Image (cartoon, rainbow, N blue to C red; front, side):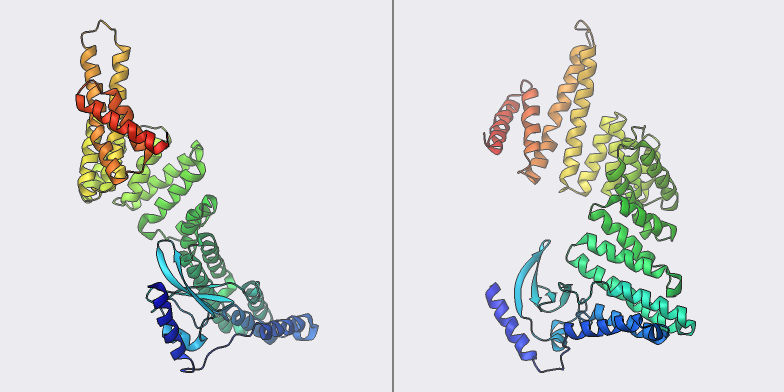
Length: 443
């Protein structure tokens, strides 16, 4: 099927040849122009003219966009091909979970959807000049220094540069190069806050920079960028605080001072976005991370659930708070409600199962601390064993959803063995899961 499709695509591309005038990029010619510009700014007389610097800035913008000026996301492939011609190579590739067609043009790759209809991304593999953007910025600033009357024209140039940086960021995002995408978005923001640019602070770009820095594992830079976005009033409807908190947890989980700082900004965020379930969940978690009683969260979570009763995350949060406060039955009831809303979420079954085991551990400890002669000891131990047995069903549900998870199988093996004397079926389950565990371990 793939081979047939590529043959069809080739026919389509060939049929477009000569349909419209194509744009040819000549890197060597651009290099000569750059060398000429370098010579001009090195010449004292020419370097004193604003026109020399404006010409240089415009050249650098043109150089940066040379390969991508005719390429746009969601542009029909046939229209793009009219401008850039036929590719030298083409192949089917997978990015993430999706298949795309990669069209090779030597210095730039163009990606289309699997049907070969729309352009979805691109990647410049051989830039003409690495420092084009930085040199363009410097040239625009020099132009203004020599002739402030050119401010309007320079502002247009800065806007073009901002769009170029955003476009590059989007192309890297498509390729799932989150680090590079984040850096391009940050550069777009930094360009916007140059006073001479005439641009408004690019709050969306600095938010995107922080968001993508998180996914590239650069948590401190994520925090720095998101704090800037917060200062600019760009909250993404409160989602900023979810990303910001998770960056804090990833970078500073064991740092009490930093996590207390996180707790403080979450408290302020909750006042501003009281129904945001992400912030509520983060607030619940920060109490647990700080090893503080999360009891203040009960009323907050109940209020949030009343406002958004179909949100399973809020019920998970309240269940976690109840479990931490050793209110195990209330916690299990919340997890059951969450499961009813999201029955294929494996984590809900695991949370429920772990809560049963925590209840069993708690009652087991009470029983162990009691005197052997205490008449209530057998009843307490029976409650512990019943809790352990009750964990089997949600563990089995989790196992059905992910039969390859050896950790769940190990839990089932251990729990079934622990309660094997309660019912004959538990011993049978132990034998089944013990054999499965050995098989999965390759024993």
